[in-house]
Amino acid sequence: MPLPSNNRNRTLTAIAIVVFILIVDQIIKIAVKTNMALGEQIEVTDWCRICFTENKGMAFGMEYVGTMVLSLFRIVAVAFFTYALFNIIRKRAPWGLLVSWAAVVAGAAGNIIDNFFYGLIFSESGRSLDQVAHFTAFGEGYGGFLTGRVVDMFYFPLFTWPDWMPLLGGNVFFGAVFNFADAAISCGGIALVFFFRHFLSIDYLFKRA
Image (tube, rainbow, N blue to C red; front, top):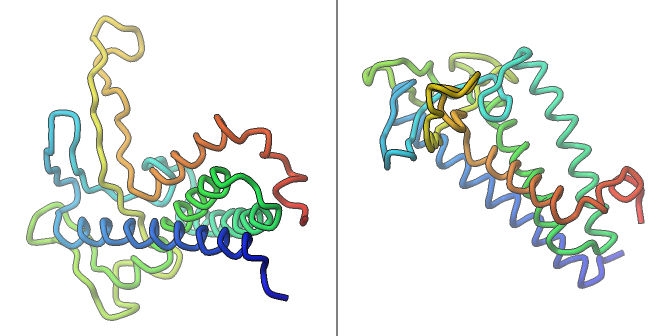
């Protein structure tokens, strides 16, 4: 049975958002990985830098468990989120909810691509300019399937806390390094919490219309 026109438009919008975020995220990551040494920084302004780092896959560079475990967990999470996205489309939820949820799905999927393939198609990134990563024959990279490291690059050291402040003194405010996929997850998640939290129930998201 063909989708009603309204649902078809919502489906195409969700797909377009996911594809756009994935493409932009991968273009940025590949450009950074193949042109910068690990740890290299490009200062755009005093509070905005491009800083090439890699991590096992947690948002904003956090690391608690192994890369493969994270990859498997993220695959399951994206599957559930995608199912919920189709339910949101079927129920003709507000457009803002659809856009925000699609951004979260795309952001999570963006980092999965790194975990899946980067270890298979890239050489190891080094800390000098003569060790910049390059594409390799498939399977001859620095790792295996599900063990690729996620590329991060955006760094916004907005200010440093005064030394006299307990615990925080001398630390950079928002010292995390993140990527476009992380930003999509964060922006989508914030919008969901602030504007659409009354839709965030198990019954609404995971029970079919």
